[in-house]
Length: 284
Image (cartoon, rainbow, N blue to C red; front, side, top):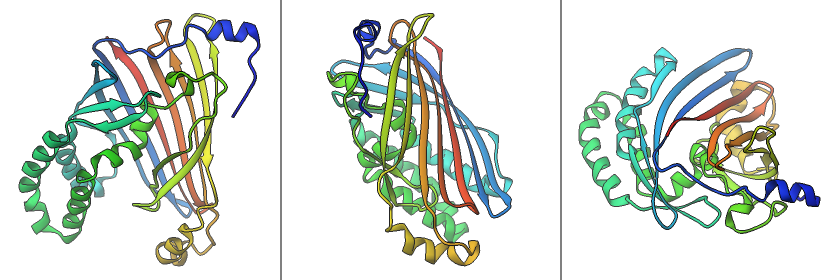
C-alpha cells in the first residue's frame, strides 16, 4: 500500500531504524484454534523463549527453549513428544539477514543436519510403533534437507523478520514484497500474500507499525486437493480465504519490543484455522 507523508510525518519517522539489543530474550506465545463443522477440532497454546544475539554483518543467532504446552489436545500428546525431540535440532539457529532484514539463509546448516541425524536414531523407536509416526518423521527429514526454504516459509520467522521497505534503505511509502508461506489446512502447499502497512510515531516514544495482508490470487490449485480431502466431510464447496493482521511496537531505541499478529485460513464457513502470535521483549 502506498501512502503519502507530509513533512511533519517524515520528521516524526526520521529516527526509525532497525536495531537489536546485544542479548535480548523474547517470550513467544502461540495460540491456535481449528474448527471442523459446528464443533471445535483442536485448540492449542504453546510458549517458548527466544534468546536473540545479533552479530556482525547482518548475522543473528536465535537460541530457543523447549516449547511449553499451556493447552493441548490429549490425543496429540504422542506427536507433541516427537515434535519436542525434532525441535532440538534447531534449538540454536544462526541466520544471515538480507538488506531488508528478512531471512537470507541459515548459516549453521551442517550443525543442524548433524543434530537431526542423531535425533533420527532416537526416534526410530516411534517409527516401529506406528506407521503414521514414520511418515511424520520422514516429512521432517525432507524439511531439514531444505532448511533455508522451510525457515523462510515458516510464519513465525516471517513475522519476527518482516521486510519493511525502510530497513533496506527504501522510503516509508515503498511497496512491500509479495511473500509466500505454508498453508496449515493444505499441508505442503504454499500461499502467496500481499501486505499493506503504516508506520506512526507513538506519543510516549517509539514507533507503531500496523500491517494487513491477504492471499494474492484465487489459489485455484487448492480445489483438487479440497475435493480429495475435505469435500465429502464438509459438503459445501471451497470458498478459500487467507488474511493476516499485525501490530509491531518498537521502543524509543527502535528495538522491537512487542508483536501481536493474527492469521486466519478458511476453506469455507465449516472449516477454518485461526492463530495468534504474541511476541514480547522479556528482558535484555
